Amino acid sequence: MPTKRTTPDLILMIITFTLLAVGLIMVYSASAVWAEHKFQDSFFFAKRQILFAGVGIVAMFFIMNINYWTWRTWSKTIIIVCFVLLVLVLIPGIGNVRNGSRSWIGVGAFSIQPSEFMKLAMIAFLAKYLSENQKLITSFRKGLIPSLGLVFIAFAMIMLQPDLGTGTVMIGTCVVMIFIAGARIFHFALLGLLGVMGFVGLVVSAPYRLQRITSYLDPWSDPLGSGFQIIQSLYAIGPGGLFGLGLGQSRQKFFYLPEPQTDFIFAILSEELGFIGGTFILLLFSLLLWRGIRIALGAPDLYGSFLAVGIIAMIAIQVMINIGVVTGLMPVTGITLPFLSYGGSSLTLMLMAIGVLLNISRYSRY
Image 1: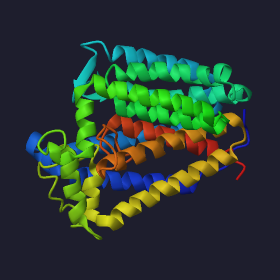
Image 2: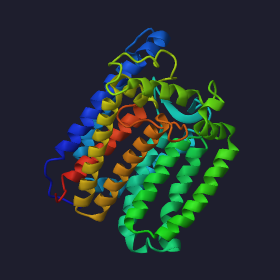
Image 3: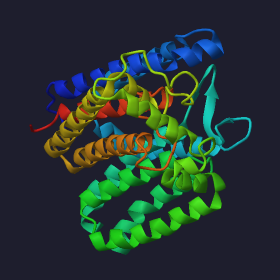
Image 4: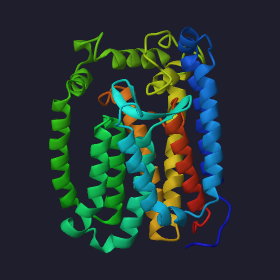
């Protein structure tokens, strides 16, 4: 267990707080009209997001001071708890249904999304497995299959909700970690073929997913149905131009783009702050990725390296999917934009993950 501790990565901390500040501003800007109409309080979503951010920041600083080997020690217990929560969320009366998915467990006036926390639990568990069995990872039967077995069980349980977006992020993150550990490309090609077949099966089995694919290929084929969100998103991004319409001046948030403070907040940001604002956000995420890779390379042991790689891969994949959806490059799926989108579980999880990264940076060789 590493013992020599230094100051955390201040650049990573500054990037995180900058993204968080922009997110709080944009959540209010994007949600004020909708919140005033529905709750007679334009600050309804903004106040809750500030509360989530406060809880997340406290958790981040607390975790930043916990030796990251603690997650190695408790990874089995944590992942078992997350599996139990994934079972509980499927039980009517315990799990709450939103937008067709039973993904939330109510806790007083708030709710948590177990699948979000499963992502981080799986990263901690897989990092432990890979650090202890890296020599076996080149073997399809002894290394690759065992490392992916638990991942696919978790994915199957998440799909029972169903939540394809969160499941995809978790699978993608784990694949990156296993690839970095040294798995053979040929094995990935075989699994990729099976993955494509499985994805096709999931799409065919649920008509709404097939509608999302067809609306991605041609949103104008159903402009008032499955293609509505992406069309309204593009209507927001296009008029933004270089400098945007101005903060708070979005037109699409006036009941055109559904719940713009969540998955499509980047569209509102691009409309109000333009290409410059959108590029600034992408630059911040790129810098965050750079600092995460630097921390992974400088970690004092394999567990720290794999843990850092998993966290930064999770954030990067989620950003790519969200912005890909918003800009029409990918089919619509329910994925939040880290640190910017409204949502308690997602924001808290991301700040907790940054706390783990900051702790690893305290033992970094760089």
